[in-house]
Length: 134
Length: 414
Image 1 (cartoon, rainbow over the protein chains, first blue to last red):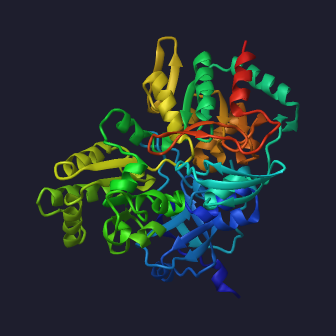
Image 2 (image 1 turned 180 degrees about the horizontal axis):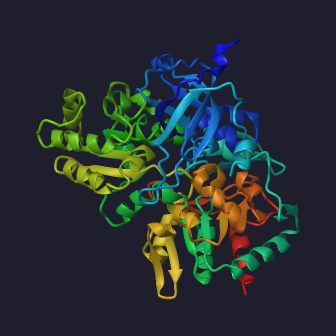
Image 3 (image 1 turned 120 degrees about the horizontal axis):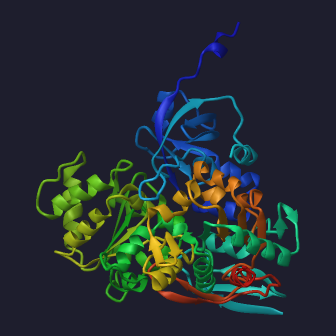
């Protein structure tokens, strides 16, 4: 019997900081519905040491859960050292699925998104899933 | 017939005026000098917008008439977007908002609007990009990564060029400093003058830096020696500039007075200026044009007593509670706003005016295709430092501009 399938993958609290990337922005400007835009958007960048601590491997899928929504995105290991407890996502519908509607001074917390991260075997959230979830 | 044209780019708010474009038979064939963003703007989207009513193809005049009917029936319309439109279209939008007694807001509402407001109130000293190129010796990128957001910023204006007072250029005459939560592409260029701070740590860093500038030992959990070195560099600046990015603004959005205090402190020793890193090509234009008309940069409601402004008139708060119809021009809120807010667009009539099919098209009741501002439509735009520039069209289009569409909607209002 595969006992592993009854064991829930551990969840970790992280803060997502969104950013802009010229390569993703250019691809998505040309074709917001295309696979390249999705591949460059449905991604979270994590520090290598942090990934080891959380048992997350490079290029695997993770489930991100906030009070406001869930998405499955791919993990990429950062090529440099990042601060602990932080993930980076490019600005996109995938990051926006997690952002609270509560604002300070009318500005959402795009760079301060509190989520739980866990490994998953689920497939990446598609744009169609995001639209259906609205 | 082949034609070579010098063009002002509308890929971002730098409005680079040195783009060479080869046009043949009304098609763009070759582009020189443009960055990735500029080229993406020039070559356009793969899915042009269609004229639709209730998601079914419709004649554009019918779509315009239906849009006018929706707005006539609406008690609390919201007019939103505008940063990818010429100033001429923005003026038309402001007129439409006034005639409807509507709320009008732009993407600056969750971008640099609050910084531009402080500049307009003369609370923050500003300068031009040419000033930076000719004079600046200390350049700070704070919560900003222009190598990604405005790719030619460093090479054209802020760091690499020789300037009138900076003939030795970046090698000897300029110091570039980056303060950010990660080592961005811009931070890499700043090398050992990159200061990594924790998310939401900007306010504490500002206070520590002000301590350092005042000759006190900074009280924060950071390498104190590095803060004191930074303070010393800033004090010695002959002409300093802070390029304010969203990383800084989002972190201190409810404490903007800290930025004012920092600039005032710096100017006890030096000459420091500030330029907000607005993104879309004419975001700042909207702020100027609305301010000229109402005295407010964004988040405006027109009433019988005049224009009023407040957080409750921001696009976010209006979508949460208030708006019963929305006109969206040149923007895609389903991509750029929190889904927890943009999902409310499904519950109200939405009129989308845009050159491209985008995510918002999927929930819009009316979609009206418009020509691309700055490529198919000429006009005026305002650069991120507040300088007005003429934007010429490159190719001819049979489509209507967003300005014409807005004016036709206005003509059809009951």
